[in-house]
Length: 222
Image 1 (tube, rainbow, N blue to C red):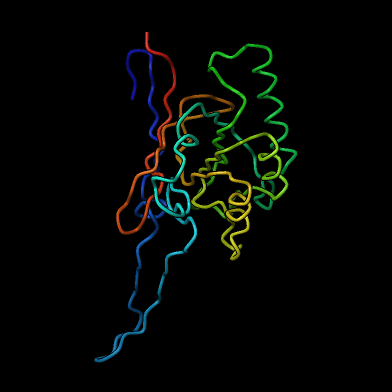
Image 2: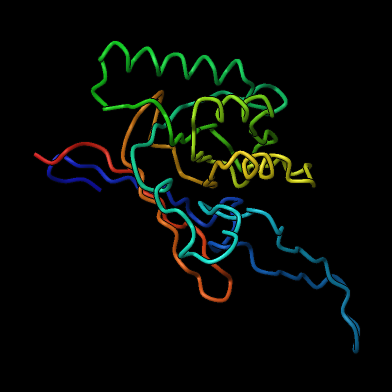
């Protein structure tokens, strides 16, 4: 959407194409495989308890009124990154992109009003139909923390690799106080771009609060 010199990008991905159907976690689903008169044998697909959802962080702990709003609203930088053959986004790749960002800011050739990142949205090019699942390497998380990043957004449905049953990346983010958004639609962006992120938490009633419906605003009103 655009007008008056401002463009608004809805970062909420379609609920099709391998992503969860509802914000807040996938619903229970059961498929009947064998039916008898008094019993069913089913293939069960259960909800993962940690952050398997679109553009939503893992459930906010505690009451929403005690949760900081500041990380979700403010300047954000979209950075296009390339995963290695095993899907990991290594520290070398991330360092190169951060150095390029710093150079652009330092030289003032910055029509996109890009700032040094406190909020980073990483476009990995994740393909739900593909075999590669991009994910941050542990050293990359440490790098983001050292750089002062407070929020990370990804176009993947989770911080954690599907085979990582211990949710290592989610736990590492929590320990470092970094907030995350997942399942974002970043397809409209290339290279390094900046904008204003709006992704304030809302209360979802009995299921608890979570940040939903992220948008990125670019440009200035004339």
